[in-house]
Image (cartoon, rainbow, N blue to C red; front, side, top):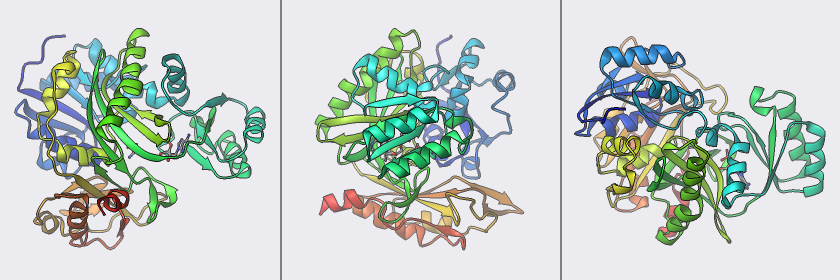
Length: 431
Ligand code: AMP
Ligand code: GLY
């Protein structure tokens, strides 16, 4: 591959709030000459050019890159990674920020990650994998509750049941093996329950080594007080105060660097963002799961705090130079509140007109990232589950939270709802 001399024409793949935040960071990078987003959303349209492209058709993506002179492809979501888009781009001589098909199995297959953890001595919950229901049921009865049942494949965040009772765990087995999650539930992983506080840790790997790239905490449940069904995430803040510098160093040493080394030793090096979902237990940080991409909405708070050149970091990862990079961050925390369509995480109401974004963004420190929005007859309308990310910075998490909710209150959208307690753990810590 040729060296990536800036400024570059860059193609960003994805359409969520994560991609709007990434597009904002890429567009302000002096290393970006031109930004194309496939398919993007009405928010990314003001930062670059949204393009229509079937990203499942890798040859079409390659042909597009050649025609447009795209030198770097940034892949936002996991599906194209797991489908091997980065492998095919590399074969065509086009650089991509994101892992190839096999290392992306860190997210694509829970069993893959668990086996790597065992191989490399990475702290995580004890587990067993089953591809047959009766053996899974016997195991649950022998272990007792609480216990965690997970579909092995990608299930869009819906494949995990933290069962308080044996009956609940057995019901999850029945649901998964009867096809309730499609192919994702053909095999299950049953895990020991870990008690503690959760946090997200991000690192950027160049295949040989990795650097820390910020921390965050998200709110997965749909309802206030962390109640109701799991979602893709209803809000987040960064940094995560539970991850002290000493704990961050432990995460790098015991979890992230052994993972990067293990995948390199297997001949399948990991290039891209490594997102570790952690449980901070009494015995130290343990890995819950890996994702092969930035989190959504965690990316929105990370990119809001990030004060450096994101393209320079991505290029350094692609070129094996990440060890020399020191990311620059704003000292102020950031917090984002997700506004979702009524019905989410089930079927959301679509089509409702949204107003007031400019009004919200006129408040100090407030930015609104689009996710499931669309333009219809010149009006901005809701077109998905998670629709807007009202994001703010502040001197404290409390101030960032108050500003974000002041922004939410300026948005006029009849079918929208949000949690009202984003950041509660961090605000409680501030006293
Ligand atoms: P995952 O998709 O693996 O991140 O799981 C979704 C959520 O389930 C996590 O964010 C945790 O809240 C919870 N969870 C997963 N695994 C465990 C575990 N072994 N112990 C306790 N909670 C867990
Ligand atoms: N917010 C959780 C995720 O992106 O997986």
